[in-house]
Length: 341
Image (cartoon, rainbow, N blue to C red; front, side, top):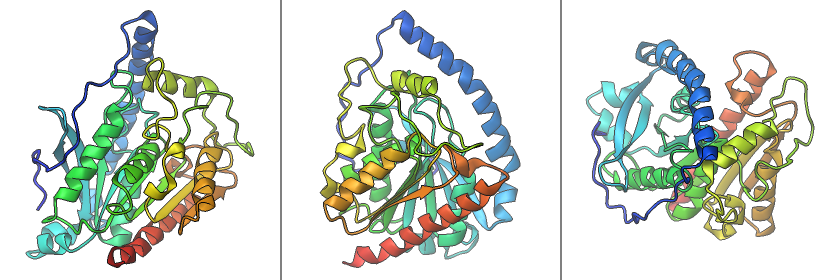
């Protein structure tokens, strides 16, 4: 069974001093803007995942959710993780044994590296549990500007290493990762840092993969009416919040495009809407992997879709989102056979 308390892991992750923003007027401006934009997000997420998507609602779909704390490499810190599982894992006498024989999957939400959006992927996590009948860990991470790069990626790595250490809770030989937007960046970065020996597959939606030009004049390949493209002013705010001055933007932990192709899992999938300014970020990474003869790297360009399209509650995006989630599930399930190779 998964404990609801922080558990010591055998992680060898180093604890190094983290960069921080200097206390300047510009930093205070970033803090003020972050505070103002977080308020409506917190209200919205409080209503949707935890009031509308109640535990009873999830149980009606055969899914349970439990919040646990995973230890950080920083002494005295922990990371919030929502554990989604089939109800049979917790409601039956042999449920714990059943969970221990099944794969495990980690997801990271979108946030611009700033917004407190844990819980925003409740529909995705619920769908994946229903489809795959496995444990889904929906993980939080520290946000900028208070905690700039690499705080978020360290949290992502800590959760992944902790997950790999819980051999009594799930089949750690079948670990896969996913993420959305900023969370997709974390999933890709974590996947190559852990390597193909420990991660079978990574599947992401609209990731940022190249911070060299992030916040600059990126444009979607095909703007569409109703398709959200992140305004340049928003991208610049996220960029300035997440990165301290003189950050190495080609650091592959930050910009997964610059990671060694052979370090990626054997299954890499990226999808992005053609109306999204991050469209070419994902496309370029997959093209790089394909040029290096990666066995299974796929990019899907989605006509008429913008950033965050899968969070829509009505319209054509709903069907596209469901098809994309299905593709995630199919590729993750297919990757399990790789654990035997």
